[in-house]
Structure formats: structure tokens, C-alpha cells
Image (cartoon, each protein chain N blue to C red):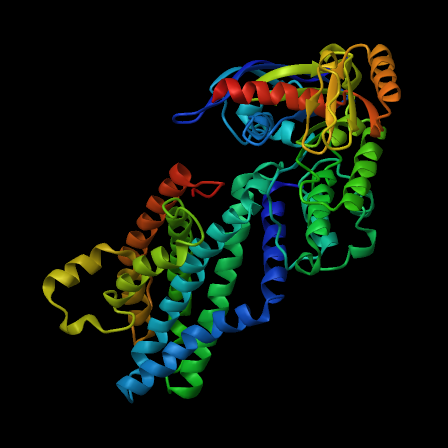
Length: 301
Length: 246
């Protein structure tokens, strides 16, 4: 596989702050890669260096064989960018804007196709200032697609969307991946990364704390399960089960859920206690993420 | 598509967008005319001979310098500039598109003011001076556009732009023979104003508008305005920013 993006030892410091502190990334052509992390982790700084919007302080970066720091036109002709915050001339219609931008590229996408892919077919001839917030975000995507890019940067593409709009956006992004486009997306939603990405990297405090496929990340972290249940007032589970009160009930973390459940239910039946809302959950990507990023956050504080 | 074609295409899109905000378009043209009426009322009969070319100068400076400094900082705040920078459109083609549209508006304004002078204030258009006036207008419109872009490098964000732009442009207009004739000004103020570009633009236009005027191009004035334009380009290249500072 050809690498679309190669990053070695990337660093970026602002006056007093080191936003990115030496990261490595390798993203293959045709891959959907998610960069995950809380606000301030350095995701946007990283992506904006790859897009050519920021100058790096150190490290090597190659995007489609070019150094984005040189801001070459040939590279910009092959990529599409959805920034976290952007604007367009709101007095123009969706079709006019996409047609205008398509004209900048040597091999553009048919504007009507780009507009349909972004899910704006119905709004194509409306002025942007008449669109809703979610629709405006789709204009960003249509504009990014106008040049028929090989590589697409999506910086928090669904932040601020309602759940159904997010679902729609996900289907759109999956469709684009199906067209063979390389996609680098940033998000702070676990489910989004899990649903869309072939591989992901979790960033916290300027470094990558974990990288791999979603399945690998969950597996590598542990095979731990969480058992939760409620008990009537005044009743406490036996201390050898190591249960923690949560305020509304109890929770036990374990590597052996089968044995634990046997002990717990045996104790409950023997004592005549009801285990209200008994639940066993495998650790999710979200737990892995929270564990990794909060550890970093605490070390920092 | 060649970059020059792309720049022309940007002018077309700018123009389309401009006319879709009719209130803004109306006041762009009404504002200088309003000043023309007020000054003619205040200064009485015969003032039109001075104020017709003076308001043309005011219109050109407003449509290029003021307008670009304000709309480009607005576009920068809205993220429009940053988006353009991520596309293959060359930066100069985008800016040339904006300047092209500003110059177009400036010329429409000049025609409107000239027509108003001829129709309402008995100041016939000095047709023999028109070729020389075109040279003055083209150089000045380009120079004030460049200076407007240069100023955006100093303006941190769009909230600050009206205050900064007005603080720069209004004092200069007041001492440059545009709103008030400089005949009775103290020497030192005259000297200061002769260092600034608007004074030379205004003197050139007023001179060419006089009945029986010398119709040759006032090259000294044009040269000084052009020099200011070059300074503007240099500052713009050095300090132009694609993102707002907060």
C-alpha cells in the first residue's frame, strides 16, 4: 500500500505552549483514519499542518508525496479540506459556490454530483444564508469535494449535529470511502471513529497515546468487563467481591465475569436479595479512550 | 483555466454577490451622493465645480480603500480567506478578483457623480480631460486598493476594522482638499497633506475638471500616488494574513 500521509517526529510549538510534541503517523491510500482526542489535544494543529495551513516547528511530513509546508499548488489540486470553522460568500447559491470552486481545479467533480454526495440536492439553488446550520456544514463538504480530491481532511465534521444528521453524515463519509478516497478525520466522538475508521490514533496533550484498529485498541487495553447492579437500601455486597458504590447502585470490574457472576448471584439468592438492573458490559472504545486521555490529563495537572 | 481567467471569474462572482444585497449596494452609491448634496447646499452656488471632482475622489477612496479594508477583514473573520488558501486558486488571483470588483464599483461611482454634477450643479463634463482623468483614476484606484489590503495586515479582526479604517481615512480626507478646500490651511498642514496620496489624487482631478483646464496627464501627481501604491503592495505582501488575530 502506498502511504498517502507520512509523519515522523512532528512538533509544533506556539509561544509558550507545545501543542504537538513529536508524533508519528502513517496513513495508507484509500484508508479512513480517525484522529481522536479531547479539545486541546493537538488534533486540529496536526491536521492544519498536513493541510498546509500551519508551519511545523520540527519533524518530517509528506502528504501525497509533497511537503505541505511548501504550499504547492499541485498538492492543493489533489486534496479537499473541511476546516473546523469556515465560511463562504452567503449571498451565492450552493450550486454557484461549488461551481466557482470546481473551476479552481484541473479535474473537478461535476458540481451536481458533489452537491448530491453532500446531501444538498434539494437545496442546490438556495442561497447559503437561507440554509440551516447543519446544511451549511454540508456546503463545506460539497466545496471540499468540488475538486474531486484523492485525499479529504474532515476536521470535526459532525460537531454540533443532531443525532439523525450525524447518522446521515456518517453514511455520506462511508460513501466517499467507498469511492476510494483517503480520509483523515478528527473527532471527539468514539462511536464516530469506531463506525467510520479503519484505523485510529488517540491523541492527548500533544502526543499519540494509542494507535491501531478499533478492535485492536479495545483488545489491547484489556478484556475487562463491568458488572453493575442495584441493591435495596442498607444491603451491601460481600467485601471479597470488591464492589464500589456508584450512588445509584454498585459496580464491579473483573477479568472473569463468569466466576464473578456465579459468586454474586449465589450470594444474592442465598440471602434473598434482588439484583436490580443487573448488567454485564464489555469495555468499549469509549472506556479505553477515557482511560488513556484522563491518565494523560492527570499527569499534566 | 489560466490564473488571469480565474481572477476575472472571481470578479463576476463578487459582482453577483454584491447585487444580491440590495441595501448594501444602494448605500454604496447613495453615500457619496449624499455628501455631494450636503456640501453643495452648505457652500452654495459655484461649489459644484470643486465638489464634483472632489466627491469622485471620495467615492473612489471609499469604494477601494475603505471597502476592501472592511470586506477583506470580514471575509478573513468568516474563514473565507482560509478556505481559499486551501484550494489551488492562487492568492493573487483571489485578491485581484476582489480588487477588480472594487475598481468596477469605483468607476460606476465616478460616472454617477459626474452625471449628477452635470445635471444638478451646472458642472459640464470636461470631455477633453477625460483621457487624462482615466489615467489618474486607474492608477489611483489600483493604489488605494493596494493600500486597503495593506491596512488589513494591521487590523486584528473585523470588530476592530470600522474604527481603524475610519480613523485612518477620515483625517486624511479632511486635509486633502476633498471635503474642505485647503486654500486657507496653515503651511505645516499643507506640507503634511502633500506627503499623503489623497491630496495628489484630489488636486489632479480638481485641476482636470476646471473649465479650460490643461488636459495633459499630471504625471507628478500620478507618480506620487503610484509610489504609495507600490508601498501598499509591499506592506500587503509582507503583512497580509489569511486568518484573524484575536
